[in-house]
Image (tube, rainbow, N blue to C red; front, side, top):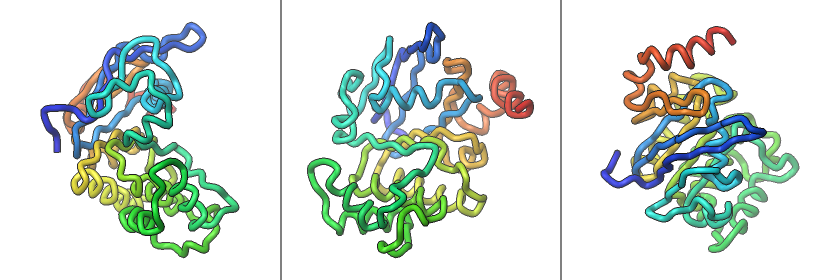
Amino acid sequence: MTTASPLFSCKGIGISFGGRKVLSDVALSVAAGEILGVVGPNGAGKTSLFEIFTGRYKPEAGSVNLQGVDITRMNIHDRARMGLARTYQSPIVPGSMTVDEVFRAARYSHKPYLTRFDAEWGARHAHLHVSWDRIAGSLDTFDRRKLMLACLFMRKPSVLLLDEPASGLINSEIDALDLIIRHQADEFGIGVVLIEHRLELLQAIADRVVVLDLGEVIATGDPSQVFKDPRVHAAYFEDVDGA
């Protein structure tokens, strides 16, 4: 659960595209073993924030800190080596490669190179129970997500950024995903930052949530309280109802 010193944090984050302010003075933090949900209507800046966290975008203002190190100007690969891992909204895997080949590519993606045992460990913790001779592109949505998670887990990351991991999943699969994510946080002290529109997932799993609207943080705290905030209803729920 939470500790006094954050494992991962950002402060004062700002960025614009084409003269339009996308993020303004955004700050958040996650502690070892904590799961932080990030929610907000479409266009709130959630994915842009993740792109800044991973190094694809450079912020115009603010800083990003991982394990006490300022990584704001660090490149993508060095951030990954430090233990920052990320999934994307779509569970895209190499369509013509076998599961074994996907694991092999992940094992040799950067040093230190990993063994097949490490891949088996990752698969076990992602609850991936498929033949490694299977073509990765033939897996269903949930197993593709598990394969992506297994490739990250075997590197034993310190911070996991999950971009809408419940997209395309049915309720029973979301429940299973809850257990996978919570186990990583509780057992290994991974800090998890989770973008999600499925509020039932956040209610079940998030220790805290941060709500973005028009690129700014409008609420933060316990999910059960934050989701009752009139500002959150105006920005998020009414947007969903009108979609």
